[in-house]
Image (tube, rainbow, N blue to C red; front, side, top):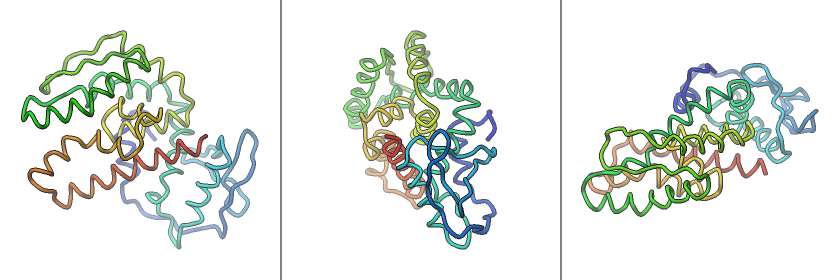
Length: 250
């Protein structure tokens, strides 16, 4: 994928309907490979879109990817293989294009969703304070990154030392965890929420609730249309896939 894509655009492309390839293999399995574990299609290793061998750091993750390939029918449906997509992002993007990806993630931190609180109604402000402030407190305590919350939508720069602290946190991640973080960040719109999911501070459902707080509040007042419901289903599924991917890495 292009190095110019943001995490959100990466996820959008993964969801796009594209011509589907016919299933060209009889059996998918997992096996050992040089440097880790591989997914094998009729005994031959899967390769990423950029033709890199899909070598995985854990047997459990390789088995889960093999299960995604084995579950395919007559056609290969990429959107039904979120773990494979995350692994390929790690290999094709979080490794060779790491610097660009880190900068894009830091841009989220500098303009983070959980830092922009409503001015009214008070019920929404109170809910944001209850859900988002503990995440900001955790981010400061865990990474030394103090991100300032403000009311309204006007942008205000975050402290440079806080962004450097977040940069340090990103630089410590291996490509697979960086890819998972990128997906969660693009899906939720928040680096803080994504880091909390990565670190186990939030599970996938609570990450969804934090990311969709404003939308959920509006739905409670005005109801939900089909398009919004479909979008929220995708968000919930993608965050759940990230959580599963992180668990399998262990």
